[in-house]
Image 1 (cartoon, rainbow, N blue to C red):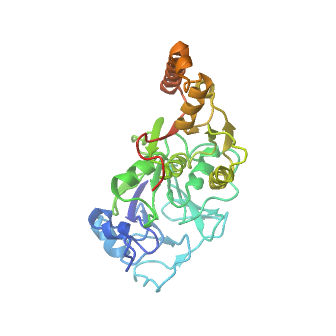
Image 2: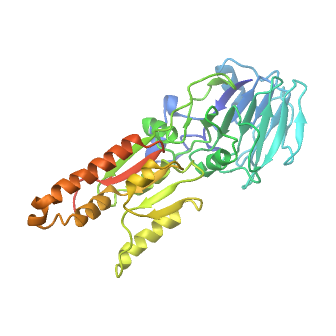
Image 3: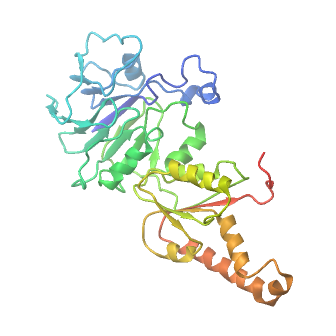
Length: 362
């Protein structure tokens, strides 16, 4: 099954018209994206966008063979003129299956937001799942029989959709995950590639043709990541974004509780509200045991507080104790942590303060 992405951007495209933001200003040339539309085997068009005919021609395809046009979401703004050679655009009710004369089967998938997802099965049996912008599947089975060969969805806007699909077995190690509906809230250039790589996904330029089910190198999810920066620089948020497409994550808080410190309690509360509900929190500085055990990915926040705890344990602040075995004990504990990080089989993201970046935030 051959898939051509006529556009990969948000419904308003990228750059957005008249938007002065930095991302829109830099979205030129290969970084510019038309509204997302998919052409499947020249027979099925998923979403109809302005300029679809020209986009197909630029990609070396024609819409003359299209037998079905399906919409995934309400198309706001001015009406899109339907080319005379295309059949009328339609939406399939949730759960219903449409069989095309080309042999493709299309099943409508219910969403948790306005719109409809489509599961497309080729005559040869390859399966593609395409989801509308800002939506995730609703009512997935606990476990699917086999994963999709390709999933095309809003990875940046709804990373939890990838997590849901992973939890149900719909996205597996060989599933190609393609990010579309890209808007100006997505980082530009190489930063976007790094963000998507953390989710095992990638983005492609408009006009790219992909073969669904073809063997390819799926982006490797980084196994060990260190996030560093100054105080209050957004390190925790960056670390959380690296793991937000996983269905389960263990958040390891090394700071513990601070009685009588309302500011610290407020910060901890904000972090907890921001994290997905399926994440589990462990308040501990015993990191080697967690790293050595099997389980879901770990987010350790942060190593600076872990080091403070390790120094407290050996009374490193007392010169006499420091020289009388304290330094050796601390070096041993640090070496054990380094060895555990090197040897862990779990994906792990670690957060640390950048020493020397300043005691007081800007």
